[in-house]
Structures are given as structure tokens and as C-alpha cells.
Length: 372
Image 1: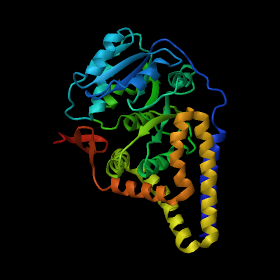
Image 2: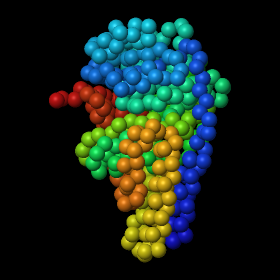
Image 3: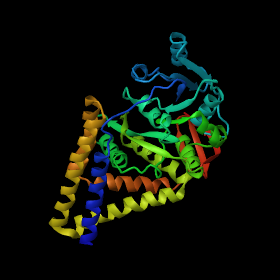
Image 4: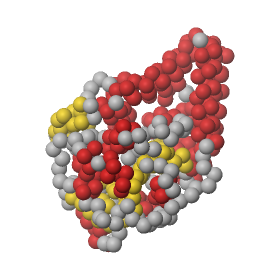
């Protein structure tokens, strides 16, 4: 077991080192005409002043297509101020699919003739100025069919946001192979031609998870999915134990209900590392414990370098709160990760926004509005 422990620590450390070493030294962008960013928002959206300010500062031009369910006063006000930049589509209420998916499908149906590149962004991100141009670069150069960034949580104060951020940090800094990745719906792009090749409007029909549906459809069509390593996009995280635990379970329940095989592979990997840490603490002795902590501290230093290279200084400072768990108790994020994965497999019920969904094979079998 001792040599297995050494191998696990070496592999996880080399994985983070690989991510750091493969960060692009030059961040090329493209600024083609015909780019449209699709943003799904709830009807009580506050207008996202920080998001809109950051979108207006982008280094590549694009049109903003905001998808709402009904009347969203903040979106209407934004469209009134920026008529040449903002388009609104009102999707109505879904009956047999996720409300976000319903809004995205309405946005796809509302595309204009000159829309050549489709970008998908979430309302809770803090995008860097290079986001749009970096997502477009591999598409324009013919290097990929679907391009994606990845979420990096920016924990607020408190131990629980930092712990959830530590779990996400493990995923965000894993090596990413161009043909063995899934897109993240918070920062994703494809050409109009690829969307039509996938018949994206039909591929999303009846689905709850937009990015998993797109990713699995892309795999089946043997498309080239490309991650942009320097696009770890900040997403603020606040909340207490209950809401944040439910957030983690929901994320993995999306995976479990779309691809049990993918969930199984992820769970086995985390279970092996969790069991190894339990062995080290219970039977491995001080040598094994110090080796584990030494590797964890090295990973934390490497991740700190990654954060400083890809995030703005203020975002990097917030993200570094998650690294405290690597220093103090590196086994706790693993054990929480495993517990969330296991609980995700206990049900096919997902509460998301104002709706309860029951999902079978990635499709919404039943949905009910949450009773407040």
C-alpha cells in the first residue's frame, strides 16, 4: 500500500504541474464579425452590472442575446439603452425540459442571418476581457469544433465556500485532453455550422443539463472539443452548508442522470484517493502522512501560480482561500467530494431554480414548480 500511496501522490502532483506547464504563453484572440453571446437569465435578474461592464470591455465584438422566460425588467431596460447591442427573446415556461434549456432553444430559434459564431455564457461569471476573443480563436483558426473554458469558484468568507472551492479547484486544474473533455455552459463557443451539424435545437429538446447534452452530442458526432486552459473563469460563491452542499449534489446528479458511466469513473477515482488518505491517517504512520502533506503543499503552490497567471489579482486572492484546505487538511475536500458523488446517485430528483425535475437518461420525465 505504501508504494500505491507514493504513486497516487506523484500522479496528482504531476497532473497539476502538467496544467501549469501547458498554460499558453501567448493568448491569441480573434475578432470576427457575426459573433453572438447567448445569456440565459431569470426574470428577477438584477441586470448584472458587473457582468455587463465586463462584457462591454471585451476585446472582441459581439452581439448579446438575452433569453428570459417572460418579462425581465432589468433585461428590458438594458435593451432599451443598448438597442444595437442587445436582443431579447422571451421563451415562456417549459413543460418538459429544463427552464434554462428552454430559453437556450428559444434563443437558437431567434438567431439572425449574420450570426456565424455562437457563444454561451452564464449570468454569474466575472469574465476577463479576453473571454470572447479567446473562445473564438480556435474556431476561426479551424483548430476545434467546440471550445470551452472552465469555472473557477471565488469563495466568499467562511469555511464552507472555501471547502467547496477546494473541491472545484481539484477539477479545474486537472490535465485536459482535447478529445476527452466536456464543455462548460458558462463559457462555451461553436460555429453556427457546427450547431446546425449537431441540430442543436433538437439535441437540447427535453434535456435538463445544457452543457452535458451538448458535450455528449459532440462526442457522438466525433467533434473536436478543445479546452482553453487560461480561461478559468471566476464565479463568486457565497452561502452556508445546506445550500452549498445541495449545489454540489446537483452538479453530480446532472452527471449521474446523463451518463452513469462517466459518474462511475469520476467516483472511482475520488474513492481511491479518499481511501488512500484514510489508510495514511489510520495505518500509514507519520512517514505516509508527511508525504501526503508534502505533496498537498506542493500542489497548493502550483495552483497558486496557476491562479496568479490566469486570474485578475483580486480574483486570485479570493480563489486562494480554497488552497487553505490543501495546506490544513487535504483529505477533507476528497471526502466531501466522494460524499457528494454518492448522494447524487441516491435519486433522480433535481431541484434547480424554481422547479423540481425528475430525470431519466438526461431527459426530463416530470417537472413541478417549487411550492414556496
